[in-house]
Length: 135
Image (cartoon, rainbow, N blue to C red; front, side, top):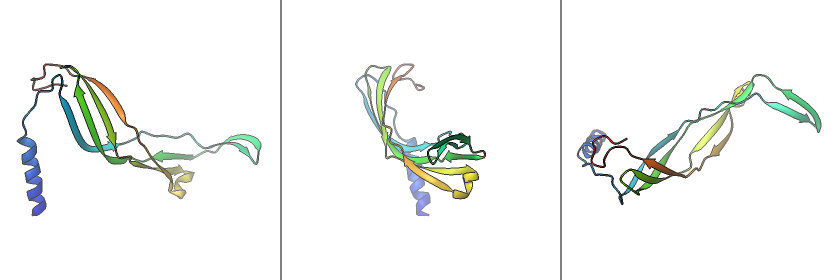
């Protein structure tokens, strides 16, 4: 019951907020959930040497795939003009799992990595700052 009440209050807060014009000199700060879903594929394993002897063999039916990652993200932006803005995006580094495919599937998780990629964006906004639709 308390979960339903909390969701109701959150929904009400979302629909009762007022719109603010995004115009020159305006700072914006947001936070949210980032879902990163890499579109990964790998070539079969290629052995270049065995015990120091060059072999250049491709092992068929081997590969790996990279899983998705979720994190919390933060953005801060500034409208330089009514139509041009800069935005800095950063988040807590998400972890991605590397899983074997094909003959490597029996090993399951081969490893993991964390990605940290802060981003500086330059954006152009169409229409006037007071417009209801402003892509």
